[in-house]
Image 1 (tube, rainbow, N blue to C red):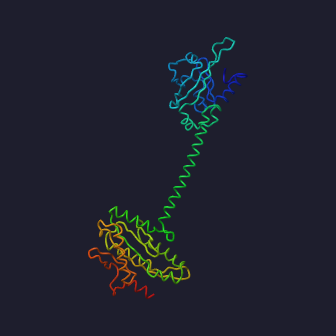
Image 2: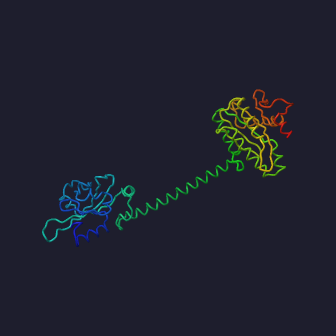
Image 3: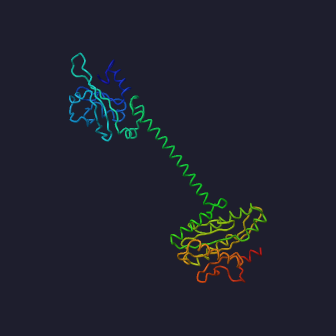
Length: 361
């Protein structure tokens, strides 16, 4: 029987290709005469056609087969094999020796039908095999169906997890963000402050209240107030460094954490810049709104071992002193007498120059 013979032999080869896509036809001398379409995909035709079966495949059970005669003796025996070019893929199979014809021309060919063993999953993945590469009666088709179903399920699970993670992150971000200004909210800032205290790194804490904001809100309405808050938030961000944290912790109350800031001079510079930026008029295209800011500050170095609440309380007392001094200025908390002292407001009967200027407008 030859794969290229005409008539009955050709029809038989075509039938075997359809029903046994992993079969081989071996000639009486042990050479491969024909390979089913699946094996032809896995092993290049030029590497398999005309090659000796035992040079392409290694029979691992039973052992000791060395020639065509030994192959023929395996008629009906269950075989364990592997491809020499791809030894990691286990195969199983069975050999059938075709009886010689009546011409007395010698022994007939042999047919070996193969299937993947436990290496099926790896072979399907590595060679890109599909259900069409196996006999319809091969359990491999069921395995492929299960693998496909599993792949689809895992992909859908991955997508669902991705969506859920995105939703979780969005919800978490929303829970920690002030929706009006886009800044961190009080809850987020308290977490940042606690981490900074635990990290024992130097920082400055500033509490800032917008002066005269209530007048804008009460006189011109909440839309004007929202505009002022949004612009004020952007101006604060532009007045500090990228690594600095700005949060809205109340209606017109803000908190700033400035990592690495350790001196009153540095705090003074930032506070003046913040106040100057906030005192620039804010316009909605029709009206101009004017506000200022009072700032209370403290340095973490002045509170060794203190909890976040104590540091916040010190900055809050400094803010109260700034407001009492006339607003439009800032004060820095001094721990030695627990009394805030001016760090940016020249003494003018307790009134800051900036605050006096604001009231004169």
